[in-house]
Image (tube, rainbow, N blue to C red; front, side, top):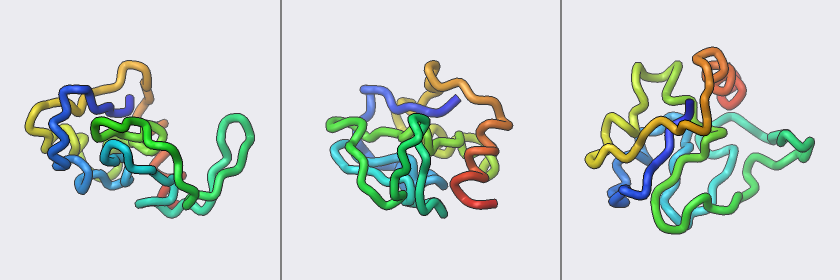
Length: 115
């Protein structure tokens, strides 16, 4: 499953530089598919093609947030999610709404990084 940041976040920012997929953003900051990946464009589930550098709306205006579709739980990079490892308040937790197998996470890594 992907990782999520709970509303217990103290906005310290320790998690953001640890993410190998650049899936973590400060509250209120727009995100892109291309940031931290090799993606040039993304085909969304509805068939829409999006330029990977096109800015997307923030998922939170208040706290740091994780773009679930970019989160691989650090599979293929580290043995554990680095955001959770460095979070001083343990607010980087498994997202119960985003369950993914190790194979799915590795496929996501391969898709984003072209490996």
